[in-house]
Image (cartoon, rainbow, N blue to C red; front, side, top):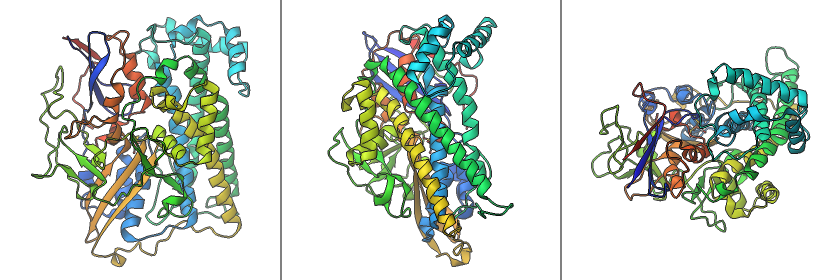
Length: 573
Ligand code: NFE
Ligand code: MG
């Protein structure tokens, strides 16, 4: 007998994701499908537009990874037109990029993922004095750790629970046997949930300073629209720059004294999750944070490359312009490709919707037919995982000491071997570890900017090729970045000064993709295999692994959801 567990929509993510997991008699998952249930058509909206405007449309794919699509977009146009941005523009883009990565990862840990490990309702049983003692042990440098502080938090939580309206904490599997933290650890985590919530609105002020607003800060093809005048009042001046430094210091404090200690504390209670959820074992990174222009991947802080089949002794080279490397297939997607075309490089990509799934509301999808609005991107035919774990493993396998040090330290603290990384918990830990690197790099990029400015270089854009009359009749380009969820690429084709084709392949498309024509599963599907479930009616195990990827289906399927769905549904047959 097969039990099919349907989770739709998966909550605490961005966008609309449906998971169907097939369980055997022992309640172990033996097959799974991942379905993006909405379509947006942004790639179609971009056709025929001025390429200099593309970033503003593309950026609005998502309100979560607020800046990365603008970055990939301007880079694709600059690549097509042969524009090299001034060093300060790269630095400011790096600062914007790292700011977003730090904010996004902290939010993911506390506000999206923690509740898979932390039982908020159990926190009601915690003793405030014991919680204070625990907090002082776990995060000794964090100032808020008194008995009174935790008594207040517990009181607030109790009022919340007594009202019968748990609000944001309403729909979870509280009391599920898979929750292992003691009540005091749960109360501490709830307190830090609230701390992180207050902080995350501050850090993004860096975007408002350099990009005018957040979400969706402003970019410009050729550089950044951030006028800097150290002594002036009508541009970014020293007072604003000092403010940025303070925000970076606060971010460092949150990451080093709150996020990382909490991550390690939670991880220590769930060692079994280092054996579950590994999935594909193949990883891909485009790389980012240029130190010598975007054209020189050898000088990226996040190294580029591919690791196949858990082989950390080899990092394979990667080329975004090679039509034999990155391709997308639609074998199980609700799209159609021209006759005879099985896989297309994004420059030749086609976005032609063709829904052939069941009429909603439906009970289940057909794993042998089309079942998702996501395409299936592949690298040289391989299904690969992208994101924090991929970045940490490619950095580690590249022999980079910064990566080796943070990974080694965490494994040492948890007394785990490197193989523990290939897991749900490894993915969650990798996100925290790269955030440590990100705050460090954020300050280094900031210092670099200040050094340049003091030396008299305040150029932030090269507009010499702004006028379309300077462009060739036809040009192709690609732009990329390492978005919080992984490798992001935009490919465009400009013809007669207009966008002839625009294809976006986002991280969550790689990870949440359906099976390809060879039957190879996407990363989510593969990661769910062999997971034992304690209670199929309360599928917290599925959430743990899927959330470890930090899904964003808004990005992935470019919104229209069939309305009126139940929050979750379990069908037993
Ligand atoms: Ni909408 Fe995104 C990120 C991009 S999707 S969040 O990170 O690109 O995977
Ligand atoms: Mg696409």
